[in-house]
Amino acid sequence: MHTEWHIHSPSPRARELASRSNLNPIIAQVLINRGITDEKSARAFISPRLSDMPDPRSLPDMVEAAELVCESIYEQDAITVYGDYDADGLTGACLLYHFFKDLGVPCHVYIPNRLTEGYGLNQEAVRKIAGTRGGLLITVDCGVSDQEQVRLASEMGMKVVITDHHKISKDPHFQCPLVNPQRPDCAYPERELAGVAVAFLLAVAVRARLREKGYFKIRPEPELKDFLDLVAIGTVADQVPLLGQSRAFVRHGLLRLRDSRWPGLIALMAAACTDPQRIGATDIAFRIAPRLNAPGRVSSPDICLRILTEEDKEIAEQLAGDINAINALRQRLEHEVLRDISELVERDEAALADNVLVFGKEGWHQGVLGIVASRLVDKYHRPALVLGFEGDTAKGSGRSFEAFNLYEALNRVSNLLERFGGHSHAAGFSLKRSRFPLLKKAICDVAEELLGPEGPISVLKVDMELHFGNISRNLVKDLKALAPFGNGNPEPIFCTRSAQILEARVVGENHLKMTLREGERIYDAIGFRMGTRLPKVGSLIDIAYTPQLNVWQGHESIQLRLADFRIRQP
Image (cartoon, rainbow, N blue to C red; front, side, top):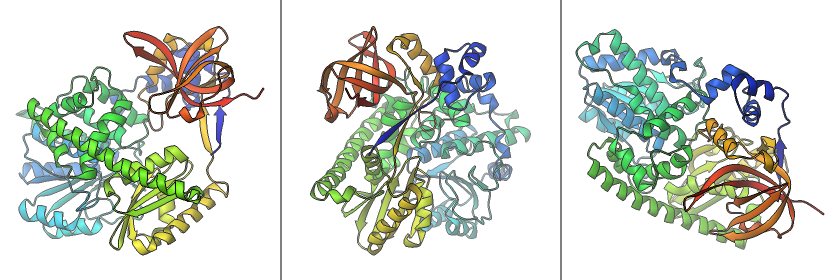
């Protein structure tokens, strides 16, 4: 698919913003490209403060939810936190576990099994919890689509508080507090929050209400900043836009990870070969989150619950080793599905002809379908649905990108589905196996309507055109002030025209390594998974890239990480 470069025009306001904010003019231009045009906004972006957080009690039903939790604490009700099995739900559920423990309140955490119970509240689990514990049920990262299960819990005598962040497909009618920034009636200024962030805000509101009630006159208050490392991991793992409040949570959470209170997180970082003193959002996304997600995908999430609540360092280290082994199994299962799809494409190139890639097969492991869909989106630059068949049922996961709202697309074909849920970029769904061909045609029809007959065009947003002479260690250092990078706040990308290739070779697993000269400067460049595009030495190319510091055998040098390149025609 053709990739268009959209290069931002230089703003005449960049120099003024740089002068007023004491910024590198290149950094000022990047900020303006992101809609940050004044000194106050620039300061808030570069140095986000938790004190600027809106009052969580302005979220719909938050006051009622906090009051109900406080009531249960004073009445010594049993409290059960019901979380999702992914990294967002796990960190959110364990955050509330530690919060209640700090309050001196016993709390039980229930995480459903993806493979046997599926997503969200299920009636069997509700009956089990109500029959053995009763009291208060708090959901984390789930519940908004489970009205029948909530009704059952109420009928069995339980109090219920729902905390969730998923979009609501229809007007819910719950007879309990529903705390969700995606509610249509929500006036809270921060709507794009992770499930763990909503759980954190519930803890903030509960602590505030307990303070008003005098609860802390005879006991210490929980230090909620201790929980920000959990918030950071869940937020990055769920690919929430790293803007506003979420950006502040992740920035401060990364600092907490340097001196985390939780032995499980320390052990996970060690198992993932991640230095706590240098950890960034990328480390969470590619090292920590996959390990927390793996057990829930291929076996049971219980081991993640154990490590996130474990207080013994040695036990936590053993659990981290076990999680590493499970993650390796996940990688093998993922590879098997990708291999099957590659073989299918080799036999039938028409499989890549549609605007949405839809693949399904008996025996594909349900837990890795979402990851495989993400790989397909990255490789083919098209939305992808991947389904596993089991008997008469088909269960699948989909991934997409900015130009194609997957949740809206599934909503348009919901008459074919038994169940679906998720976000604009990621969703899960199930349907009768016999409807698979109908779904494939219907979703492609929706894509043609939304994207046009020529399908999606890959757009690379370039912040600014630079000469190699503009690049320095100070610039790379200044760029780090814009971190954490991720969804909603991508790493800045620059472009340079007419760079000459002095050397070019394929290294590692199909990576392209080049030495380039432009003007009087020479830099090395690396293009991950670009080895098949090996250009001729001596050619002139235009490159889109992010400059970074590369450390090799103690030597530090600037390296350009390529996003794309084009051979210039003679």
